[in-house]
Amino acid sequence: MRAPQTSAAIAARGLLLALLALQAGAAAARGEALKTHTLAGDVVLVRSDGGSWLESAGNRRLLALDPGVELTSLAAAGEGWYAAGVGRSEEGPRLVLLAGRGATARPLPAPATSAPWILSPVVLARRDLEAVAWLEGESYERLAVKVAHRSEGRWQEAVTVAPPGAGSQLALSGAALPDGELILVWSAFDGEDDEIVFSRFRGRGWSAPARLAENNAVPDVTPHLRAIGDRVLVVWSRYDGNDYRINLARYRDGTFTPPRIIGGRGTVFPTLIDDRGTPLVLYKTAVPRHWTVAELDASGAVARRASVPRPSNARPIVERTSSGDLLLRWPGTDLAGVPLAFAPATER
Picture 1 (cartoon, rainbow, N blue to C red):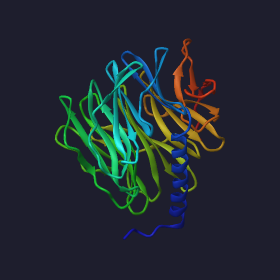
Picture 2: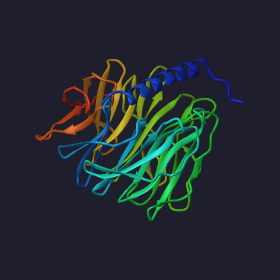
Picture 3: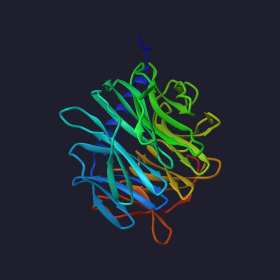
Picture 4: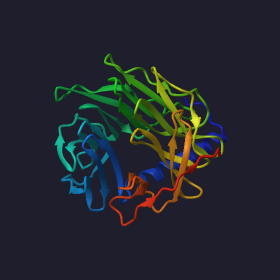
């Protein structure tokens, strides 16, 4: 049986479902983009009304993908890149993988799956594609975390990192670390509320899923993890009893530091960005309706912020101009890029 929930927890869960619905709508919005930086330059993958296409070094190329394919993960690997997504058809969902360099791409064989639900595939790559992780199951509330490792160009049998639990498991994110370790994070409902959990792989199997932070009675949702320079950071939204706020923790020696709040009231859907070794966090602010970019200092505190009115729910990319300034851009739309005017951060 599930533990009884307080009225506050029920309200927070309702707000969470509304946020997830908003996120799903944004994911399908025209102009949703993914970006990574390879040794050969930046690569941008855009989903738009006219299909999915690539941008790199001023070149643009439409991807020859079947209808119903949605690419959701993009990762650099040396001078090249890998992307993962889900293809949907009457036969059911399937994993889709691409390999590329610049604005050129080719399909890769993907691990076989047969579950009626497949969500959130994540590429785990360093110099080459190490593994792909995803969520699969019989229903949205009964999803397992699966991983298939790749060796000498062949897929090994998929392993279950986390079986279905007390409720939903969502928002899978992960990275391949410079020392060879692989790490995954996601949100898992424990019967009372959603917690951020993680698992790590160091060549001898995946560790048992563990809470990233101390147990609490409020939802922790939508994590995003990234290795930036010598730091491995994770950001997510935590409910504080009234609002969701962005939290951040750093991964060290197999565990995470205690979380610190870096976003004000109503801050949701954070993404970590590697800006030439400097961590940035891009997130939505509910009131006012802004996109906000926070720059982190060496300690993980916010050094400065910039916010712009939100012209679209589609997540923009952060881009440097030829003069070195940062702006937000919505590839695949008619929206113009918006320069970011940073100001020193103040506590909120």
